[in-house]
Image (cartoon, rainbow, N blue to C red; front, side):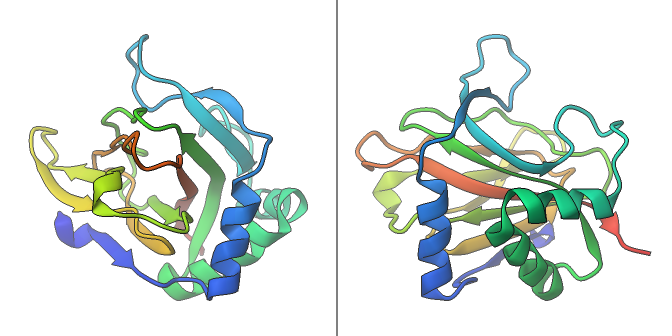
Length: 192
């Protein structure tokens, strides 16, 4: 399974990386996102840019989702086009959003999809990171009993994996001095 988690470093040129961080590190975040069904699960900030928002049963087409991203956030539309060509040819965009977790807030163990053709793409836009900051994404075996891979949120790093893989965002340390921000692209399988 760990072979299904692909990590790429130095994905964007320095100016694009800094621009992505600057775009995300602004006001406009909503609060209330969660990745655990437990009623007391921690809530965190999110920004929805395009795609499915409540259910995969929504009447959406890949073309309308891509157009929504182009309208709502031209920089991330351009980013998506570059990423899909280079790292996941033929995939179609299902959703684009960002999460913002304050120090000490983490996610719950979850799977993003029940379809093995769906991919999750996480971009880490933070400008700095140290191992003391924590905030890793942990990937678990199918039984959800054992962590099998940890991906550190290095600046300008991209991780691509099957949405069926159980994973969790660990909290960033209170000593880090920043929030854990991630930009997500969810795919809905290969284009015909």
